[in-house]
Image (cartoon, rainbow, N blue to C red; front, side, top):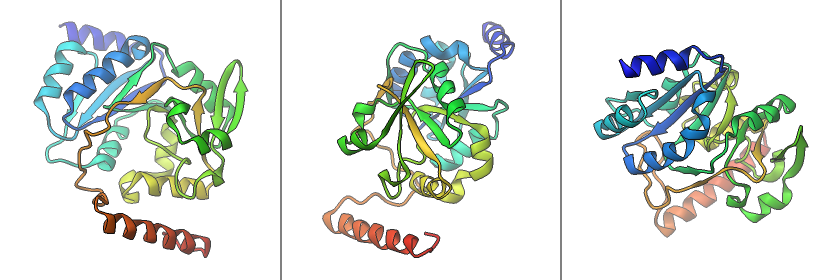
Length: 258
């Protein structure tokens, strides 16, 4: 009865944002993420969704006990990150999506109003990320475009700031459902990097709130994705990957779709 009451209250508000969070059995990290995020954000959502690709009953039980207003989807069999995101986004009925992952620690502020102002001011922005700017490499911090709208400071990442990255990101932030409808399903791109490449070709950029409101806490607790290329771990593997990246960059300059 309590869950039904909470869901009625959530679904009756006029919010136009759906929370979509991907998880993969890392209950402790998810706890830290949601406990730092939800107190200042939950009233801003029409619906809150968490998809767990590890089919973790521990994740499901914890959410049902502590955050009954969050809907839980368990994947069985495992789908991988991209298909999980497509599955989540196919359930969204709002114009905006606040995308999140299970390994970020948030400051105590509601970031949605600021993100919304940036999206409204910047039609060529794919995502307004709330990751702290100080998390990024110094060269990105130095070469971004600093701007302000209605008291909200943010930074745009120019198209040439990186050959592949920073035209799209799954780091926590606000995006439009229409973006996914245009470029999705994301699974066809295979990797987040290739989504960013596709959007870079179309002139899209990532914006970051300045100074940002969360930082990554999942280092050293990576979970392999069966649908993603195997990560380069040995020196020969890293060298091969580095060479192939340079070859593909050259091929793209020559007009190849890679």
